[in-house]
Length: 128
Image (cartoon, rainbow, N blue to C red; front, side, top):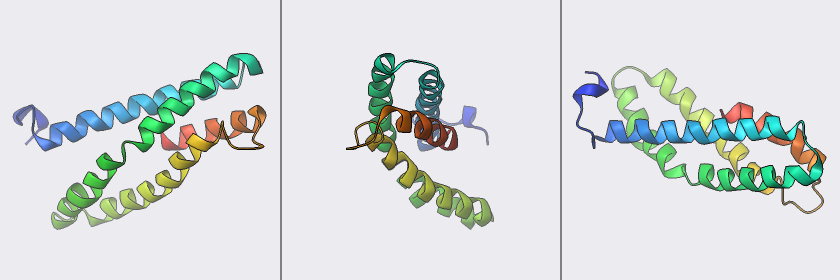
């Protein structure tokens, strides 16, 4: 069965839309990190503020990841796909640590713009 056969409000379609939205935010965050690599400090504040907004939204996507872990991954395992499900669950754990670090990057005490400029691209690219 492909997703075109499912009703619009089917949980799988909802998860796909959520996943696409998360990827869009991560793509924007990656673009911000590229812009940060080639701008002055005063221009960077605008990018850093937007990166913080996106970080909050990305962290807010935790219910999506929990649904994957509690519903999708067990269903995959029941159908013989336990390896990929376990791998994705480990990726979620690594992503949690990284995405939570994003929100504090631009506003940490003692963390300056050059440090943020170095760390944001690495984190954004990994998450994407």
